[in-house]
Image (cartoon, rainbow, N blue to C red; front, side, top):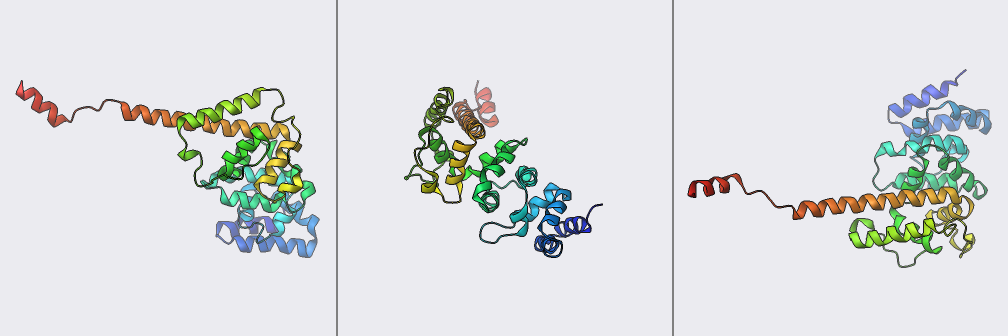
Length: 253
């Protein structure tokens, strides 16, 4: 039998009361225990679970973020694209809150996301504001200290993007040059509970998923190049003469 709080949570979310929905779920943990809430969350629609979790990050924790299982989290987080958040800031904060509530489970949560359809895209979106540096880490194994987040791929030239794509292709096709290498920096050195540590865990503990994220970001670079090339082609395409000018020329003849 479905717990009454499942329907109540859905109704509160539809009404825009995310805080009320989170409180209703927290009350289950208080009155019936953490295990009871975990069972309830199995019955909550992933979109509703995501709606609640998006409102919380490391600065304001939620009992839902604290108890959600890797499988529940993965089912919910792949729906993040529905929000059309170009910066993916909410996704980033929400994921950090869950991934680093217990460092020993970070890889387990990332693995659950990577194994679900659409998971690679979500993980690539998580690095959206740092994709340039993420790819540099994939190639070199170290994090750049002079990265300028304000001048990302959107401002790069076609030649620069093509060079980056070639570097990635070379690294991906050289056996285990990405996945099989040993860490150049220890995890403790970049343990920021943020994107750098996430990238490190993916590369050295979940290498197959890491490579798929690299491929996803590489394909996005390729699409960027194609869009720029199409734009240049439009710019050099001969313009048709205005109708009035054509009429004047014909009348002069």
